[in-house]
Amino acid sequence: MIYLEEPTLLTYIFVAIGVVVVLSILFIILLLRRKNGSKKLLDQTFLSNLYQALGTKDNILAIDMKQQRLQIEVANIKKIDQDLLKQANTPAFMTGKKITLLIKDNTKEVFNYLNEKRKEEI
Image (cartoon, rainbow, N blue to C red):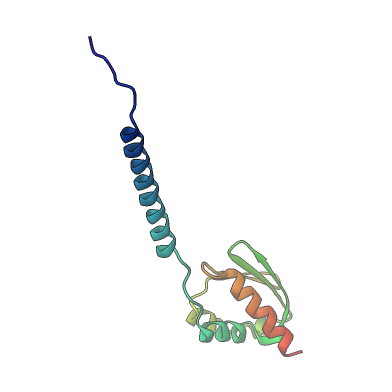
């Protein structure tokens, strides 16, 4: 017959140390994943080129953000500079007088920049 001893204080200490080590490893893995998946920093030239490509405040009527897309209503589609949009490497498509920009990183920051830039020039 096998007799099991009652857990001793030493057993509880080893279990606690094991739990702490496992939780620490998981925490470090989560931190590393978050760092690797961090967003790219915004370049001021990118923002400026994007604003110029849209035709500045005279052409931008309204801006709306939906997930990683910016929907921009413009006054005149002909004022949009397609070459600058290509340089900015920003996929875009048009529907009527709305242009939708697909921005993977920092969508909210780009949205805020365009709105602030429009307000500055008023």
